Image (cartoon, rainbow, N blue to C red; front, side):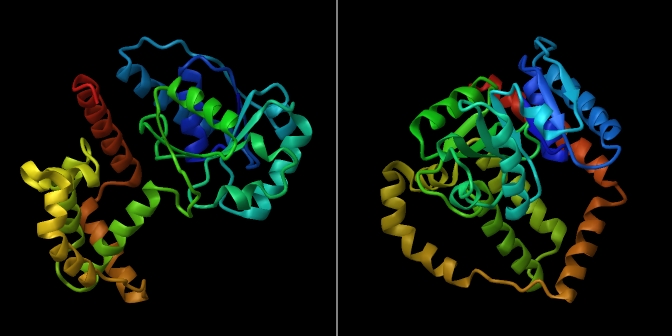
Length: 300
């Protein structure tokens, strides 16, 4: 198992892969990257052990100075390079020259499409986009696009073996599924602040204590199905569909001007109330672990 790129996503993947018994070799081009990497992975493994009540069979994790050594014996290569097409293409050329014909290359790209990324590959059929939600060692979602049925099936087996929840795009799209949804929602959250309707903190509170709580157990379509009462989504669309269309027409398309950016930054600083990014990440992860335990208890 090879992990290329040891930023936040690569670190998290490495911990997850090792937690499920895979031996992992990790490469990153940065100087002196290993101390921070190991600190993150140790913390992530503690979180996974806590979720699994300590019952995990850990594989090994080894860092290497070259791409070629990382991928030489790998059956799966998880690429986490920055969102630069030329950079990724350069990396793929080195990977393809060093792996066997059955090795799958998976990209964690958050927005780039399969067709753009796979363009220079000699064996396109073994390439898959596999976008996680951050942090991957806790968040179950993996969004997959792979035109080749054999590779798609292999990706499904691989990620379900890690107890992730893969979803499959039937057609590639910039931003995949979840980031498109998140971007649409944040656009309106920014518009609400821009229009002076509510503060940054109250927009976040409205989401967390309202639809966000419901969305943690049901998706948007299912939520509106229940919103239609006994008649379900059909009744909702017939009776309330026109009002939904009128509401869509009022949604905004804000421009991130300097003034608006300052308002957003000041608003998030007020909401953070002196807590550092590290503090907020720890709070987030602890809350995610509580939610994941509740989901498992409810059979989600």
